[in-house]
Image: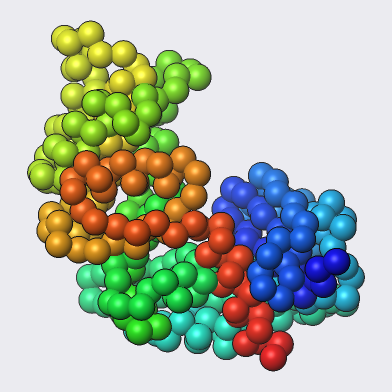
Length: 301
């Protein structure tokens, strides 16, 4: 039997993931749910954690390390930020213990950037960076897509700077609450569809025309017979293409490290291929588990 070494938790805004890991960050058991920060603020962080510990049959004598929104200002315990430029190992040094509990529970800090005109923050993605660091053997531009996508410049274990793009949140708002809203339960055409790829190309080449290109999701249905599913793919491709164009400066000489899983990985792989930017993919779930395991060894060595 594999010996449990750590209980690792990624506590997001809308999701919760807990893993019982061995010393090599392999998963022994897990528990997932939709009880993220917003839900936890009502039910209580300790109650949610206990429920998932029980579901995963987690041992009671192993330490618990948490990354993500549990350390936000309105989270369980504020873990603050490590200011960039920052060495990735500084993340574990900033871990905050949770007071008033019997177990050894600690929460990792986020990263912040105070560049003039470019203030920025991340929370949770820094742990993915720590886990992916072994694959970043040279100066890299790391893309971590999501509700708030992060593009991070990493060099020799240091985070130099980063930018946040509200791509996922904008897609949700535009596709549900504007004139471009699709009928309920409409599923967007896939990442290989012409609607998605054409929109990626257009927005990547001309990110300054993004609002005009977005409106074509409506006019295309009125004039060209486009379906609601194609319109959603157009919106998604437009936002992702503009994000990539903004993050890379329309320069396809970058070598991107894409840290993503599931549907997001499929969309961004297709988009990067469409605009002919070379990239390597790193699984985001593996990266966050490995990052939590590395941080735990540094904390409890």
